[in-house]
Image 1 (spheres, helix red, strand yellow):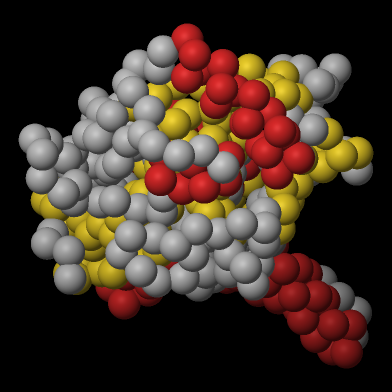
Image 2: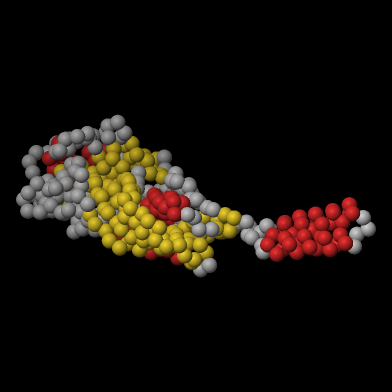
Length: 393
């Protein structure tokens, strides 16, 4: 999965009577998860659903009352078992509550005349696990492997999967973990050195030892006291924890790239809590909210048809140069000017679209040393100077 990501995710809208730019699979499913509520929406082209229901001819938009009654009768017979869910280990049949008809180039899907059904499932509390298994995969008008896109939408959750005949089952698990494992990216480089005391301490220690030796009764004892003074001064001079120092230019670029990859990888989580936990491992606390809102806002950028979601699949750094090495609140810090390209997938009403967006900006990185995490580098600022949509390859 992917994938944060600051993709420009506006969807191209079809218009007029022309063939839409993104037809997508003819049927897709959305699962909506709320507090004590579970429902589903099935959106499918009439030409496919009419075959499932054993009906002939096309339907109007909107449906007449006779058409609505006939369609609901067949949908309850066919869709209820077809869209059965396994919820917390128990099989639940969907109850078909409503149907709507949309004409070509209308509504969220709009590639062909379509029917939209809503189904409800009897749950008393938020499910911890939801599974869907599918058996009928209609051919796509563009060819390719038959597939069924499935979206799961919750108040603070999102997931997406494409079911096929080879992989017909998908299971969603509520995030119950207290923490998440960081994604496997390049380790953050931390350079430390002992806290240096003044060289005078060593000299004073030596002088003190020799002075004491002058009052000693024998030579052997005076030599021991001198050595003791030197060792004591040396231990004092090197006492204390390690401290971060500024990395060289090559190390700075490695740290910068590792941090940016962690930031984008955080949005691979399907819950808001999971994203925040992953970001917190690489980002200064005061930057968390603004960074989350900026990246998340571009992910769910909407068009006329509704919201979109995105997954990052690649992150490429085109240029990177250390801009300045500074002290930030008494801590070592540096800035990197860079240009990077984010590649990903846009997921929107059963469609998938490739996206590549080019960014330029400045990253501020600061050294920190916490009792919990130890010494590390964190992102303290991300100023984007420009972003531009690249042509799809």
